[in-house]
Image (cartoon, rainbow, N blue to C red; front, side, top):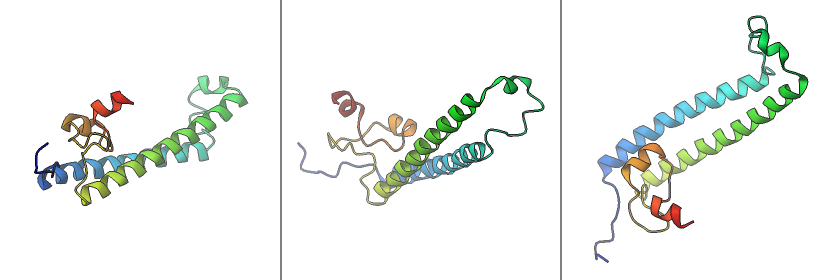
Amino acid sequence: MASDNTVRYSDKELDEFKVLILEKIEKAKHDLDLIKSSYMNDGNNGTDDTSPTFKAFDEGSAVMSKESNSQLAIRQEKFIRDLKNALIRIENKSYGVCRVTGKLINKKRLELVPHATLSIEAKNMQ
């Protein structure tokens, strides 16, 4: 093991990730608002009169969609929380370091999953 144990992304790279994460948070909040508004409107977004296929749904599917919407909302809130935690890791310069192996998480993986805390290697070990 190298004596230099500061395995981390450069400040410039961290700034790039920060921009990416802030954009993802904005989009995630927007999506969450859409999810919430759709279940507050009982799924009636003014499409009843224009889409006859919606009339075929029974009461059960309305309840189902309300439940799946709240599941979506919960997942979306967790995603936003995970992204905000990633911002904290950027601030304390531990972002992008696998919490199991201590190695840098592949940049491509972080671009796809910016809140990742595990390298693919560590994820496969689970």
